[in-house]
Amino acid sequence: MMGGTTLARLISELRAAVSDGDEENQVIRTVHRFGYAFSAHAVEDDGRPAEVSGCAIRWGSQLVPLASGENVGDRRIDGKEILYVARVARRALPAEHRHRKRQCADRRGGELDEDTGEIIARYDSGMKSAGSRVPWAVASLAIALTLGAAIIHAQQQVWNGGYGYTAPRFPTATTFGKGFNFCRLMFQSNRREKRGWDTDYPGADINFSIRLAELTKTRVSMIDASEDGEPDHVVVRATDPALFQCPFVLVEDGGGAHFSDQEVIQLREYLLKGGFLFASDYWGARAGRQWEQEIGRVLPLERYPIVDIPNDHPIWRTQFEVDHVPQMPSIQSWRRTGGSTSERGFDSDVVHTRGIADDHGRLMVLMIHNSDIPDGWEREAADPEYFYLFSPNAYSVGIDIMMYAMTH
Image 1: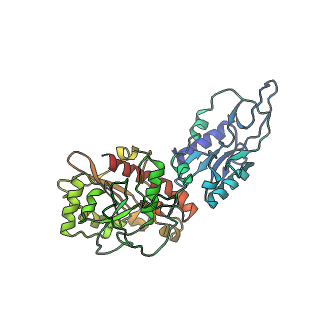
Image 2: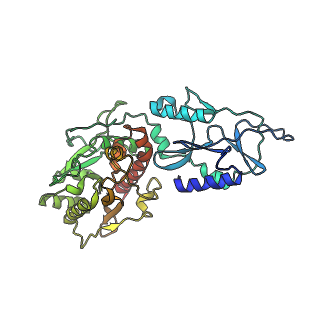
Image 3: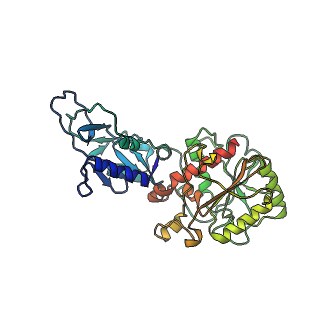
């Protein structure tokens, strides 16, 4: 996968190589909200009897064949660019995705097969194969989407979003031992930036559990075995012995947290015995100071310092390649500000990714300050544009963190 800047540079070089000027763009079109489409006309080359159905672009004196259904560089919501591979069962696509596929097919001069979901390009036959390797710029575009495509394939019912209070689901005597349980930490707040411990609850917990089961081989514990069964996600208190059954615990809106002395002791024991805490969705300098003060009571900073986590840390290669941790706002903030990613303006315009390790170098705590990673999980079905911008990256980051927590 590549970033938007890299793709734009490659497209510019490719256009220059095939003399496709910015005004005409007859070979490579910019397709609004999708990316780029190869639009070269099929041509016939006398003297070459072999015919190849499909499409191609002209590269100097050569023709570069492109497979039908694989000639659109797709701009997904995560801001990454891929080659569009249109083989997704229609029944697995939400209506908005079917509409996007149909729109993309129409703009390519193709049609959407209603039974298979495959986009079939309409091009004249008689095209001749150049019989040569695809140039590097084209090859760079031919990157199969891993995360986004798998998300679209989802069959499990995901949380559609909602507002208001949902009662916490606490673990019972039969909760653990049947697979992975998503655990969220309940705590007291002496002030709130958002809702406190239950920010994005329960949607983020449900959706992340579903996607973890789909995108990895992790066996997720379910409340029941039916097709529409819900993952058995739980809320735990720091003083609850059930905390030690959780390989991972989420803290949201921790910028207002205030732990009791007993919670401090038990959280410290949990983390030093192999537990893992992920904190996200706390914004601005004040929330940052308060959270670092509270986690500093749990893990004294003179022995367990807070350090920056670089982009080349192994945690970002656990399952997916994450080249940087993006800033993600809540969907409410994103809508209210007209698309801004910083929820506190200049006070939160930089994402800080920090962690705390034990004496052996194992990360016990990962903190992403000034980014709401869980809202990309919770709100994936609430708004298609928000999904495309944030959810795939949110799952990449979250699953990398989760897999690291469960394997270290």
